[in-house]
Amino acid sequence: MIGISKLYCGGVEPSDVLRYGSDSKSLPSHLLQFSTDKKPVVVWNVTRRCNLKCVHCYSSSRNVAYAGELDREQGRALLADLADFGCPVALFSGGEPFMRKDLPELVSYAVERGMRAVISTNGTLITPEQARIYAGIGLSYVGVSLDGVGPVHDRFRGVQGAFDATMRGIRNCQDAGIKVGIRFTLTRSNVAEVPAVFDLVESEEIPRLCFYHLVYSGRGSVLIKEDLSHDETRAAVDLILNRTKNLFDRGKSKEVLTVDNHADGPYIYLRLLREDPDRASEVLKLLRMNEGNNSGRGIGCVSWDGEVHPDQFWRNISLGNVRERPFHEIWEDTGNDLLMKLKEKMVHVTGRCASCRWLDICGGNFRARAEAVNGDIWGEDPACYLTEAEIIKES
Image 1 (tube, rainbow, N blue to C red):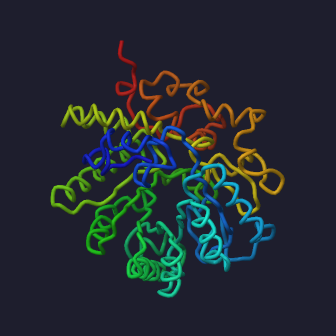
Image 2 (cartoon, rainbow, N blue to C red):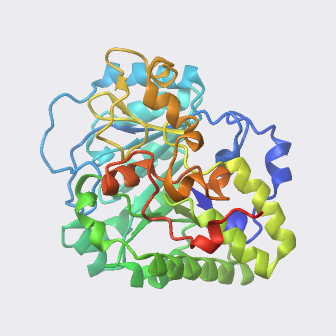
C-alpha cells in the first residue's frame, strides 16, 4: 500500500520509523508497512459465504453454506501459530466474515495472543450490539468496502439497499468507538464517484480511505475491460493526490492510501520532484523502506479451507495447507521454489520490470496480474502506468 497522506502530504518522516526500531512488533499500525523484518500480515478468509453479490469479488462468494471451512479449534490453532511466528496483524475477511457465528471469539483470541485484529467487511451486518461487542474485545479497525454513493454502490454489490445498510454499519462502528475506514475499488464504472467518496469521508468524519486498484481474480477476472487505462489511472491518482492535499490544507487530515499498484510510489515521488524536491528526497527513503509489493513475504493469505496463498488475490496458487502443516512452516519452506523466488522476486522479474529504475521501490508490482493477463508469473504487470521515459535507468 502507498500512503498518500503519509508520503505526499508529509504525514510521516523516515525518522518516525527509525524511532521505533523498524521492527514490525514495535511499530504502530500506521507505520507497519515500513518495517524491516516484513513479518507477514495474514488475511484469513474465515468463510466463503457472503450476503451480497459483488461483481469484483476475488473469492466468487455466494450466499450458500460452503463445506470444508476451518472450524473453531483449527482457527484458534492457526491464530496461535501466527502469533508465535510474530505476525503483527490478523485480518479477518471472507466472503463476509460477520456471517461466521464464532467470529467474536476468534477475534478476541487473536487480540489475547498479542496481534492487531482487523476485519474487512461489506458492513451491512454490523448492528449496534455487534459493534459494542467488538469494541469491548479490542478490535483495532474495520475496513468497509464501499464503491460509490447510493445506486452506484448497490450495482457493484448486486443488492438494492446495500449502500444504506453499509452506512448504518459504519455509523454503528463509529458510535462504539471503533476506527473505521472505506475501501474503494477503482474501475471505469465508478471512478467518477471518487469526489463523492471524498465528500462522504469528510461529512461522516471517517478517518481512513483506501483506493484499491483492480486485481484480476475471482469474479474480478472478468472485469479486465473495466480496468482503467494507463491515462485514466494517472488521472485518478492525480485526483486522489489533489483531494487529499486539499483536506490537509484545510486542517482536515485523513489517512488516504492507494493499494495494489506500486507504480503509485514512483509516480508520487516524480510529482514531488517537481513540486517539493526536499520532500521528495524524504519520500524516496520511505518508499525504499516500504519495498513495494510483498506478496509471499510481507502479506499472505489463509483461505477458508486452510490453503495458504501468497496473497488474497492469487487463489490459483497454493503453498500448502494449515491442516497439514503450521503456517510458519509453510511460509519458511526453503524447498518451495516459487515461494523462495517471491521473497527475492526482483531477481526474477522480466520485461520492462527487470530494467526499471524503480524496481527496488515497486518490487515488480502484482505477479497475480501479470499471470492473469500474460500467463507469465515473472512478466511485467500490465497495470503499470509509468511511461518508458519515467522508468528508464539514469546513466
